[in-house]
Image 1 (cartoon, rainbow, N blue to C red):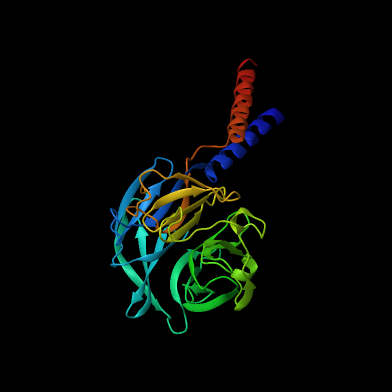
Image 2 (image 1 turned 90 degrees about the vertical axis):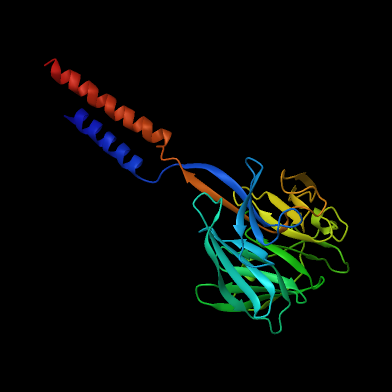
Length: 319
């Protein structure tokens, strides 16, 4: 009887485990970008890094979208900073396979313009809020979509008043941006500690290179005519491993060494470096696909339990 009870318990536990959360499947590595040149900029594009394919998701609903960002629920946010009503923030929803926009893009809000620079970089933070920067002001802004609250979180000191994109580093958690470094006209990467970047107060923070003052980014020069073309403009991290991707307006999307600052391979299908491709602002999104397959340990537990049950039945049949 004890052996039978143990077998039944093992099978029960295994079945409970199988009915629980499914095992995470392969990651779909996707970068979303605005176009240029041969890719009409009023559309939004998806780059599948696993297959090196580019998909036109459809019309953004506005003529000059900039500042692309994506939330975990696969909502795309973007903006027309030159709208007569102010910084016009829009959103669009993707279908379940991330291959097309669903429904008409909608206006979220005309964000403030008085006293601000022109917003030219945006990302979604770990708190679900939108973080923005731009040129004309060395500041980081935050927009709480749910609470409809716009605020300034950081005022940067040092460096030129030009910031062109933002992304949160999944390894350190810090906010990383592309901007003009101190005493120069060249752009490179800077970072702000997450506690300061997401603070409710408008804190002052001195320019700090991505990776620190002795990192490769402290000597990296990205400006007009650089390896990212006339306007280095896009920044995105792979949230699964911290891999870095950057772009220039229309030059295409490149992998970069996050510690070496060395430009790697051009992502196939995104351009050819001649201002005829993608690269007008980037957003990275990774989705988990559930396979519905039990864990190996769960399978072993189930098989062991079934084996004990079978042995018990055979034993009973011989008596």
